[in-house]
Amino acid sequence: MAKDALAKFAIDKARSIVALDGELELKEVRGNVAYVRYRLKRSASECAQCVVGPNDLNDFLHDVFQKTAPHIKEIDIEVEEILT
Image (cartoon, rainbow, N blue to C red; front, side, top):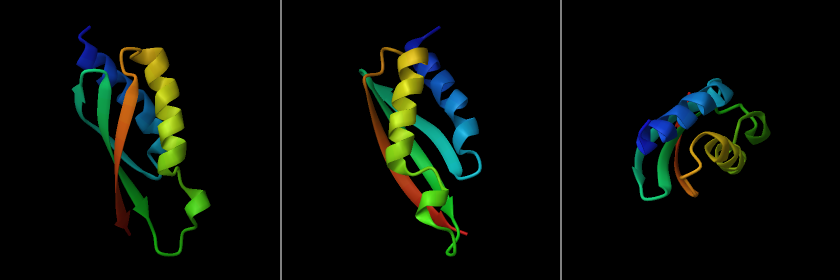
C-alpha cells in the first residue's frame, strides 16, 4: 500500500468521529506532512464546546496517523467554518 494510500485510510477512519460536526479531506501529503482540510459546520446558536474543535481534531488525528500511517509526523489542518 502506497504511503499516500495509508494517509487516506487514516483520514477515512477519522471521518466517522467528526461526521456530525464537519468533513475531513486529505488535500495532499508532502514528505512526512499531511495537509488536511476540516470543514466545520456550525450553527449560529451552537456552543463551541459542542463540536470537535481543531485542537481536539489535531490530537485525535495524530493518534490515528501514528497507528495507521506512521510515516506521517506532522499534520497541517486548514479549518473552514461553515455557518448553517
